[in-house]
Length: 294
Image (cartoon, rainbow, N blue to C red):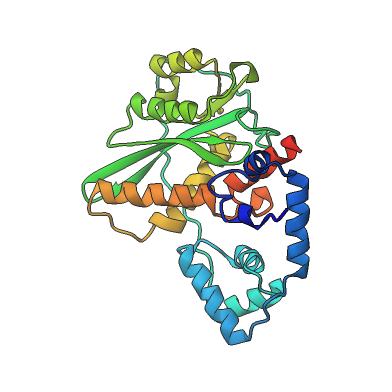
């Protein structure tokens, strides 16, 4: 049986699901893909053509990729090129990833709400989905005023599984993001899901703690004033602002919201993540699910 029909739809349905419906083995499909990859001719390109493709990828990613990711993207597109050649070409023509910047801390930990223990304790490597979620809030500047973004990240795949954007930093913003994550993922109550955040008043509030209790989620909080205890969220916000928002002027909150959502969808589906062996968060989770089903 031929397997070519599967590849074009893998972004719509996991390969494991398609194989099960079509009654073919997942292992057989992957063997077929591997054979095709070995047999497929690699495209050799001149220095001039290589530069064109490098510039194209750099533009497609809004300048988010440096040479390691651009090199891997070229390989994924079938080009036979060494990483040193890509690095040298980019250096020669001044092509580089956007530089990291420092951003303002938005945490308000001066409150009298209860503080949860730091159960995560910087153990950011998680072995399965929906075991540890992390949440945080950041701000985005617009001509209409600040817009605030709250996210929920699954630490297994670094996927953004929930988010909310509002004109204020009320507790509703973190509750809405958590509810989105819950309805999207529906984690089993017996998984012992942990939700980690900073000590901000939004996360420590009674209303937010009540939602955690409703969903059977255990709270975990960073130590006071220690952003490294929630480093994955800080990294995500840094990437969002550097790769997409910095340098743009948003006339309206709606424009900023649209750009932010567009980046998060691209981040989940496409962006090569160094922590995940240079695959996207959704691809990383799909690969794990396929391995469990094999």
